[in-house]
Image (cartoon, rainbow, N blue to C red; front, side, top):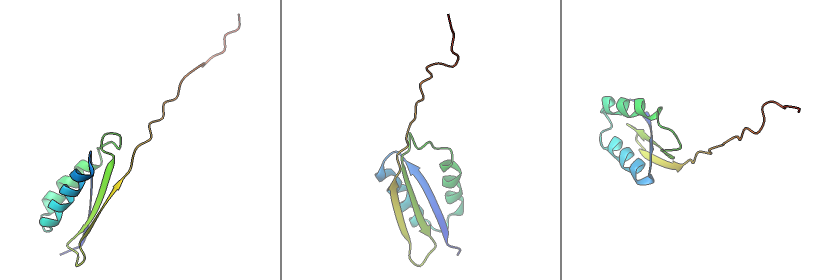
Length: 85
């Protein structure tokens, strides 16, 4: 089997760890891995700040969970045009 890198995102660290653990339980289920990978790209880091990775089908299966918080930047528009009286 080919070694694969699986990534996921979640709202909590426990959620990411549980998802990666499920992937490690089913290392040959390529359809399950594809379903997870196709949904990760659409998740905002604002709502899903936790990111995780796992190597499946590897002799040294391991998983890593990192917290990445999104910075929300709000620009205040003060003046677009200057109007002189």
